[in-house]
Image 1: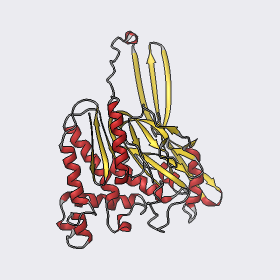
Image 2 (image 1 turned 135 degrees about the vertical axis):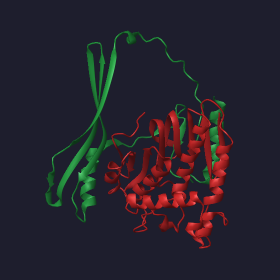
Image 3 (image 1 turned 90 degrees about the vertical axis):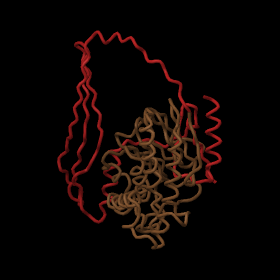
Image 4 (image 1 turned 180 degrees about the horizontal axis):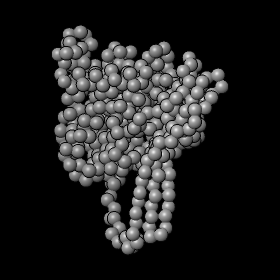
Length: 233
Length: 139
């Protein structure tokens, strides 16, 4: 079965090949939205950003998420930096919430499932995944077979370049999209955002040295660069 | 406006073949993983660079027949020039280490169960849901 709900400003699809998708997985996403959304005035994140809630008084999960965001800033040489977006951790929260949802599905005994949160994916079992073409959104740039993996993509699409280099505040040059695969979606998503912000000159090498994560970079000149472990069709 | 198709469809479980004639012949699979390093090489005015590869070797022996498969699972540069323009240098060095293809365009096809792409927001939701519903009817 599969279920689709609109939570956290996007469509979230949860599919299971055998068995039912439990209700509490969507309860979880609604809880994440209430806690982390910058569009909700009463969320913990909104209160922290307005200076009404001290980090030390925030819930354990908020502290954990913001702590991981700080680590990711170090791991990405500052290219994933929530301070550059006024402390909005959304770029990590989405993937992290999917990782936690996967744990809920594991706990429910599901063996083969997929979660697609607005184009960022985590699967258990083997699934056939298409990566959207960065210039032709109705088409695919890549087909791959992913097993027990998270797949996150960052890119400039028709709505405009929403990722900027936090060091220069310019949109990145020479790069169309970065897709990262690995064990955790939150980390993969932050790495994809960082690599995309680095631009076409810097991203390929940074990607080549990631530990436990693989990448496919689509450059503006039409070259597609993949690390040796990136899954194929 | 960006359009997006997100769909997840169930897959009919396939019956697995039970009989395995090869099981009669003894099959042995040995996998080892090793890191190999290249020598430190001088890179013009930039300094030294060293490349390390993680190689996985799988040896499959069935009876007296042996096959060996080697896969590079990781490429790193543990030593690279420390220079203000090193990103330029590194980029030129890294690209040959990565698999290079030319960007192609393929149409969405029924074999695809999930579509990944850049961050989608609510405007894509209607199309996402619609596509998922269409796919669901094909199960």
